[in-house]
Image (cartoon, chains in turn blue, purple):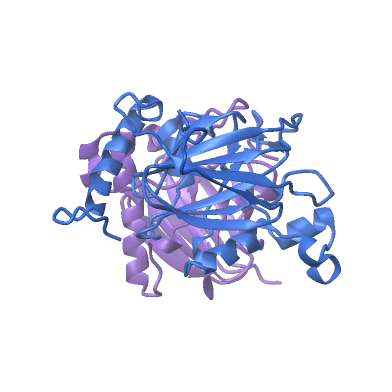
Length: 253
Length: 219
């Protein structure tokens, strides 16, 4: 299913706790995010790599799949009716996408100042600042700070609408695997979620493994999980055909 | 906090400085000065009013759904909700509400999401995003799709269950119900009076809304 374990071309890197990361993922690639300690929170923003005006859209993702959270079989929609990535494997079971990400003020209120002057490179990095740095490397900025996916974060909504951090025992080694359906600019920040009650600043390291995904068949579980997703894949496949120059067979930007 | 809380307003429509009916399928923009009060009236009931707010002087700072729901630890908007910006400031505060619950997770309909949600051939149907984009283009401040953050849907009911289900439930509004909010800073208001015909967010019957603005009460 995941392809990475036996993929000779798979690359692995560690994303240090507190750090940000960005990369242009290609259609057909698979990214596995592994959380060795079971305590990580990884915020993500996704954009069409060829046209970043097209980006991950939380409401369209949730509405199409009648869900308030993400897990195996669900897909991440752009605001143009297309699927940027699919969740093909997940041992965490719940990834939040409604509660957003924290900024310097929220982090300072919980974990103290943690300045660079004092802590050097163990300073308290927050998700918003990390996103702005990574977005800036791609010519993007504040207007592109949309609602994020919060991998490994579980936030529950009560019957009265109350929003609460769901405290659960850590599950060391949990992981989630994303298959990219379009060439996607992916931005990650391995930083604490603002609803995490922990007062110590200690985001753990995570592992990123990039390999090749298996092709999406007509019987793909993500495609078939909702009739909406059948249409989403149709629209995506119609669009990605335009990536390729019909004469040379070369991929166009 | 986020249960149904009904609160009436004492403001007199005869004293409003702005009073206009916006038909369904139309966009709307207007600047509000700090302290001004905006009322949106659901004239015929169960209309969805897709709304975004921006700092009038710096539209890079805009309404943020996730900062709003985190600030109040609840997903439904009603009296007392501070509508937070992407910079962590309150742009407006809801000060009266005779509906009692408004959504900020459901987003706005678009031609493309209608294709996914209903059928590929629905692309021709009018949508909130088209109204937003036309209103921003006419406004002439250089704003475009990049500025369309996740919005508020006044009068819309999108319940989330503890096990993570999400649905579009029948509306909780009724003819004449309204929501009123005070601008805490100078804000730009962007509204699409929703034209959706495919789901119960507006009881399959898009209808006009009335917008009123009052100046700040004399001190």
